[in-house]
Image (cartoon, rainbow, N blue to C red; front, side, top):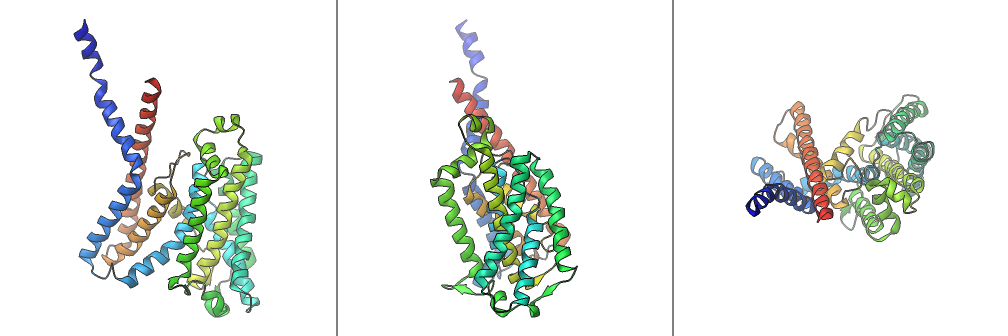
Length: 345
């Protein structure tokens, strides 16, 4: 009889071991992503020696700065089990209004232009936050509707016209080309924003509540967390970062158009998913978001250097995103099973 009991107890061990492995992977996901980025960089460098030059690395990181800023805001939204499909339109609206303003007031201080764009984005974020948290509209529906509204407003205020570099003052265009302590201003802005975000997430009560709301909304509500405030906050932050990015985008490309950043929200979401942010909410690290944005930046830079067809570039990026999603799902299942086993023990 004892042998029967022992035989019955043996089969679960492989499942437990598999679960333990997946749980361990979740703890070192960022290291794995960093390893993949290093390996990919080595492979690309072997095929094209110009990839890891100082000039190309600087261009690559500069081009990734705006993506990383947007991915930070999107990560906070996704962690609360939300989504924001309006950030491309918010970016375009902010960029267009600021571009029109600096074209009329040529002497406007660049810092005021940045502030104006950020305020416009915050206003857009507040509207979405109100619809999601107060009215109770699903985030995907609310942001899809506002995406079309913001995009329509962009075409309306611009009357369908572009604003080109010759209409903008040099002081505004130089925001994206200037340097602070030898580092491109866009990179410096991204570093400052992430530094503030790391402190906010790790050392403030509100930062921890964001994860609590996404992890288990019912428990968060019972524990006294004001979910309305948290949702308003994350969508407002997302809007502000999108507004700021609109100013940086127009400065970088020296052009403001009605269709600016159309579809760019999907790239931002992809960076978050690659970085390990769970689309189910409640989990995700800012370090992973940075790496996810960097990986997309490397792919955008490396694939053309390898003479990969533009059509295949999109397919390759999609494949990598799909693999990342599958890994995230498997790891999450492993973590959930591991937690369940611990509770039973």
